[in-house]
Amino acid sequence: MKKIGVIGGGAWGTGLAMVGRRAGLEVTLWALEPEVAEAVNQSPRQCVAVDIPSGVHGDTGEVLGGAFNACVTVTFFRPKPGHLLLPGRSLSGEVAVADIGIPDSVLAGVNPRTFVNGPCLWLRSFPRLEIDSHKYSRGHAVVAGGPEMTGAARLASTAARRAGAGLVTIAAPPEAVPVYAAGAPGTLYASAAGQEAFAQLLSDPRKNAVLVGPGCGVTETTRHFVLAALQAEKSCVLDADALTVFSQDPKAMFSEINAPTVLTPHEGEFARLFAPPLFGVEGDKLSRARAAAGQSGAVVLLKGADTVIASPEGKAVINDNAPPELATAGTGDVLAGFILGLLAQGMDAFDAACAGAWLHGAAAARYGPGLIAEDISETLPGVLRSLKEKQ
Image (cartoon, rainbow, N blue to C red; front, side, top):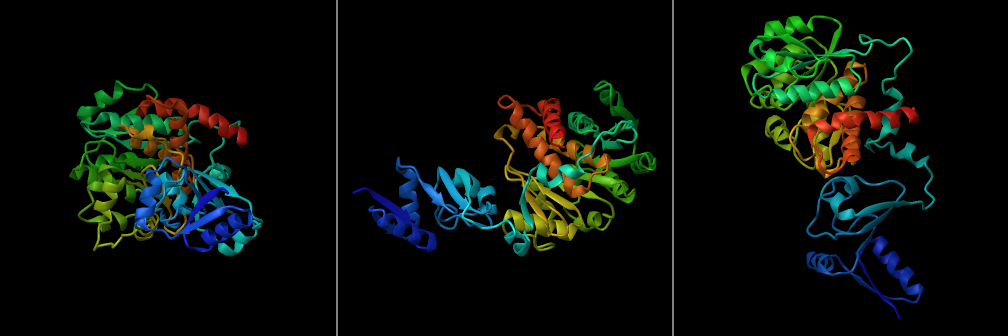
């Protein structure tokens, strides 16, 4: 007689044990203990999880005491956030969704607010080229360039152009303009010595989207540029130094958000900007991103291998297509540039953030090993070609 072990004392574990015994198997049912999970994970035997690996929280992906490292997880109807959020994602292995007869109409009663990122969510609003399109109809984006780390703004500006912005201008301190001008010939350059000059540049109604942060430095000038961008009420992406510079007074930034705005922090920047007790943003990644979006009034894209994008209204998307090759300098600047380029073309802020994150992951995955930040924009046209076929 074949022997199997079923771990987990809930309904699924009990049900599986019953099915196994009816099939003539000798079934042992164990309750979940950390020691049991550790023993299974260290054994050479493969572990298959039903619904979600025991010990992983289905809503957050967090490990509760101990958890199993499954090679395959068979779940039902729809994936759970815990299958996508770390560390649950790394413990779930290959996730297979099995049809057990639950009709799609059930979703209407569930009214879900959390989704897996993918073109089905935003493809209808993705910018399309028409026969009479021209560079001004595709938007004019502005990237604030810093005086020293010039590569960041250049990566972002190239990404914005690849994502479809008709024109992109880098606004930089006068002494740095020659450095920027030696770069990509298709990018425009403007001198902006301070807040007044930057605000004057943004007063042109044709300039409809702006990015501040990459390579700008944590300085008063960066702070002034952020406020000028928000007060101009253009679609805005705030990243990196543009977030850190407000860590002591985030309300000064949030109070100026009156137009479509996307914040793109990594975990360190997020912790500085939304630190308790001022905002009390704590808990799992999904909850923190939602709370931050609600309190700031902006779309929040909390970066990582399990990037979460949240809207002020509480809708959230988990992005799961980012390959580990993205762990290299400058990739965040490219992501900010993709979102900027989509905003310049009139895409909704939440959709632009979701689409930008997905395109970023898809292009990086297509390139594969050896990826550096510059490769992502170069690989994007192939991804866009595939999207166009779906449209």
